[in-house]
Length: 266
Image (cartoon, rainbow, N blue to C red; front, side, top):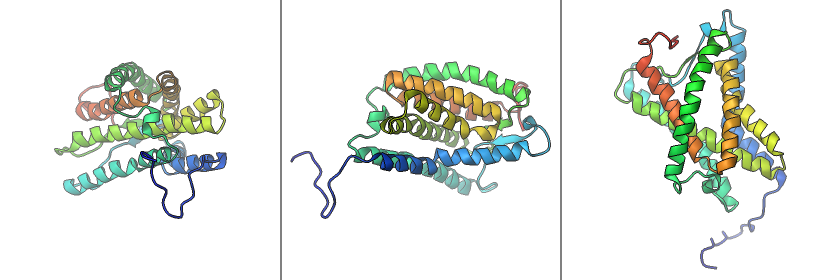
């Protein structure tokens, strides 16, 4: 029939995946991406709390140089890391396409650009201001490490790479932790409340390397993002919001660190 793909010789016809296949697929996707990051963050947190001194006297560094003193090699490593971090998103797109869907079913497409940009900007403005206040309070109370959002050398590609890194974080997290995970958990028969808890705790878990404040703050953000996704049916605004938040954190730190008294530095 016109418009349908021809089956490959010797291939079995496509069938609806079983619950076991969906479960295993979900675990594999998480094991290759943010689930593994959650375990890594937990190990890092254990190391921090068992190290002499308070949490705020330790630093959690993001976007560090991969080849100090060798800017072109460093740039190659930075771009390699950003690109390979998006492979799980490509895998999710492939798996969704095999069931006759795609990333569009998660609302990650270009059909509503102004909707996504407008609502994403509003979300970023609200969460950004409260997030900074929460981080400073958590660090002051000794519940958080000093977060260093960037430690790149002063080279021409520094800020473009930071912006790309922020967008990569946003796409990876919102597509997998919100859109994909909620879809799969619904297919597996999870309750809406259970799926919300799973998504939010997962988001908090891979920020645990920042301390208890990073875990709690991102878990709360996860609850908000799940509610907004269910209301709008799109991860697009969440990707925009997350991108703007991380761009503000990465670029803002690079521009302000050491120049304003309220911003903690390592």
